[in-house]
Length: 106
Image (cartoon, rainbow, N blue to C red; front, side, top):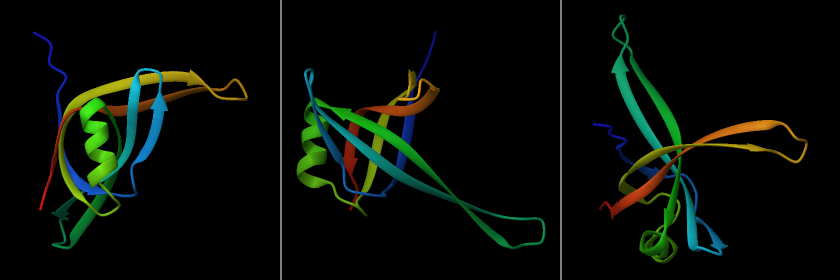
């Protein structure tokens, strides 16, 4: 059995970027998650990660209407890896989470 499931809770780093696509609305989101731990000296260390998320259909419409920079959300999705060539022909790789469920946290 194969499983590709991602669960994230964090804060939007910027307003959703809405893209009109021939397959429908697409929302690109930037989600900030933070973790903290104590180092061996007892000092609190905080680390942050920025995750690129994409939402389609109803989730994209929800993002467009209700999400903005600073909103806390919980998402379920799957990890997607894409490759493309930029304008200079250089191969680029991008990882993103394709949202399958989205909840606004209060």
